[in-house]
Length: 164
Image (cartoon, rainbow, N blue to C red; front, side):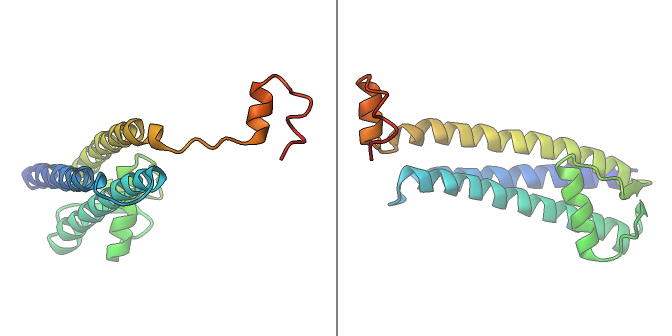
């Protein structure tokens, strides 16, 4: 159990570090990108997705190392044999989806519980970061004015749908 507690602590620390660095680098270089605001927001969401993917893989590697290599815990349900199986379990746990086809046994239960909480916090962090980026770049979208909007704004609603 001590090994699982140490592993969970190390995994949490590493995922926080990964998340912080990905968001920091994204934030530092976002304003420099010579792209429209829409593309900047897509970059933010993509960077957050990359961070989460790295974190899921890190946990998957941790399960593989602890379970398959060191024999500290295991899994029930569908057999977990390959690295891809461990990454699948990690993704389901990190997102709190929890299909239930694979479930942790022994010491991996502690790590899975911590991973779920860690994923929840980091997903919330990404949502907050994305919100702040949208708040900053959303007003920079160019306003497209069409005849339809001008007609509707002028009160000429009968002609608004037909105007092009």
